[in-house]
Image (cartoon, rainbow, N blue to C red; front, side, top):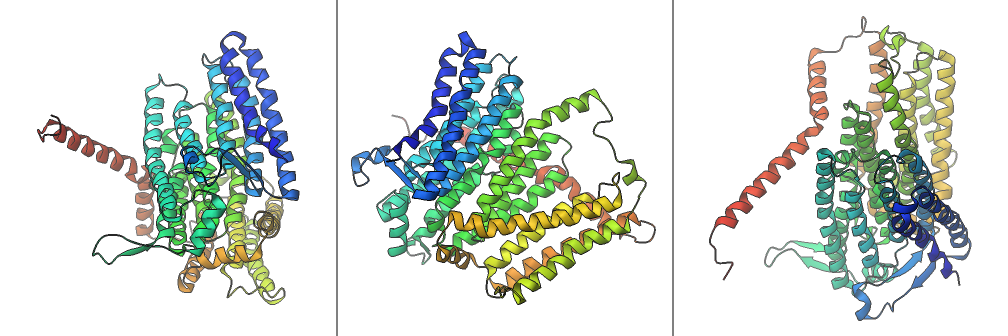
Length: 569
């Protein structure tokens, strides 16, 4: 009945065709003609979200699910609440970026080609998030990998070409693993349809042997989800397959906005789309948690040591994507989607504005303004105490109230603790940054800290209650994800305590920095800090490791090529 919603992804394709065909002759007119279909796609995505929310998922298939002949490329659309939310995010970001690019890239020789590629990328993203089955999702996933190479745009620039090639190469690793996961899933369960795959995987557990006589076994669903997760790792720049993202920073600014706001979210979407499958494998969820946590930590550390604004933003995205993947590994799938939406809107705005910042810095040597008050070591006890209380005392009171007054079983429910803990960590990070606002009256900073805490906690409560219920209406389903992802009690408690101690240490370091005459930092701590700074500034030398590995593989290939082993007649 509502099959016309498939026009939403087709409208950006229409814009790409119009611009691509008429771009050379009409130029500005063709660019303006492409705006209407993209804006219409956004409006259509909003309507689709309303329809899906009220009437249920929309399914349109151009094949018979039981027909083997159509398995080569079964085209169809399945739009549920998750797909509809992602479609709205993609179209709103694409609309803003497209309109911005019309002026930003106007004088570029490949102006029309660039806009056509932007519109086509929007089409591919929309088809990917609304795919009816795994094969169709992979086809558009693969197209997205190729488009990342083309969107580098300036292929006459050696650094741009090198970055585009590394992006293309590393993404192949994830794509091959993803394809292997799909093939294995079809071999084990005989279907590529999402709902049927989930049902069969839950009903018929399969155990695979890792080798004849080895005695090592692995669950079939664990093998499938691990392979597919490698695909998500590559697209969402998870450590150690993350180096392609900083290497792509020579592309035009609108590309970064689309990449960091939409394309890189593909990994989080994939895990959410297959959440019922991942919920059957606690082992995979634990692996997802470890990779996400490691990426979040290393990405944030590398971000803090970069001296280039685009690299800083790039590693910030890597850290945030790790944060998002870690949430999936903890079973908080809805929280991960909420995170990727907030990060996407924020990072798109930041990247569209970073060109202005770079231009201003070139025009004015003293830009951005250096805070002289921070150099003089000014310190406000009011600011420090407010931040300390807001990040430590008030959250403790809220925690005790939730446990005692609201009778939330925090001891038995890691899921409830995760939501509360993430809200606390996020507000603490935001409040810690406010201590640098030395030029503002101290009482204003204190008020801003309290408002920040209130805003973040209310936002996370919205995510915990409304958004989680919206994406996953069945409470038992959400509880099963948290149960499958539950960590050992000692490990979970250790992570909570360690993070708490790090935040307390952060506040005391701020105090120590402002009172260098009274609190002395041991010499070995300072030496360790310098060494860590150099290590993270050089991005853990991962780029060098890949370079040496590539050179070694090339040498081996040359030696094999020169040997007469009888491969050719």
